[in-house]
Picture: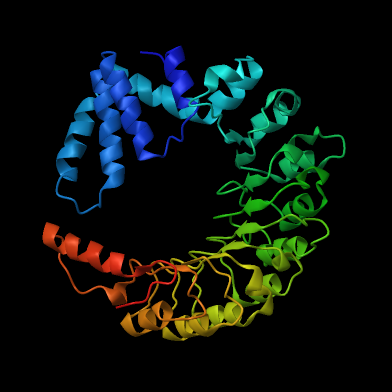
Length: 376
């Protein structure tokens, strides 16, 4: 069953990753007789919302395989990925479907995701037709050297100037020369309004020995990127000297959010962040999925430069109970929401039973401290 116009109007106003969206969509389909398709969508929501050790998942997976035999589910799997990626810019912008037809409770989508090749091909149409409410852009790859050259060309339509949030996650081709990405970030005049930049999980060191260093050096030119407030470098293999470059750059003066999760950072790197005077502007610091232990926790807890933090994410590190107490009792971090969930050293050895999962959840809840809340 193809997507209906009213279904399109609903989906284009929603975030497909939100659990509620999937379930509301499933209810909508069931009311119209598409029961197998509705059940499949609910199963996906259930699987996404439960732990991998949940005993119900086995039955759900078996039912999922059975549902995949239904033609309407097979058609759905062919339709929906292209729909989510392409509808907003292809149907809305190219075929000129009116913006009011996409409204849901008076709100329009705030962002678009599209392959770099289509973005370059449709630059002028995008410039003419996108609504002002679209402020987030995610370009999918692989983005090559030639693509960065085209994006930076002087005669390019100023479509990038419409966006405040640019994401290149998992997008940059492994063989891209870091100089080309750096030139794009510093010299593309249409990036003048970018406030949030994400380069998460890009292999910046594949072609160059220090590709990340080249990119960070470019970003340090604050006169080129004066508005940059949030930087995501998760999964980019940040080393200690990279942090030094970033923390001592002019760019860091403006950063309110720094996300460097999953970078194999240890205590010495965290001490460097804690001692950096320019960290005073940070409101959010995401250090999750690293290797932080007691010394790093102690440095964070006593840093005079982190008093403005409102979110400190230390999920999935090596933090034990002694380090957790230091952080949760810190007066320096009294205004911050501190997240310490899924630190193995805080959790006892437990099995996969329902009772054990309840214990894990309770302990995790204990180690998420809200502002001005003290550990008991």
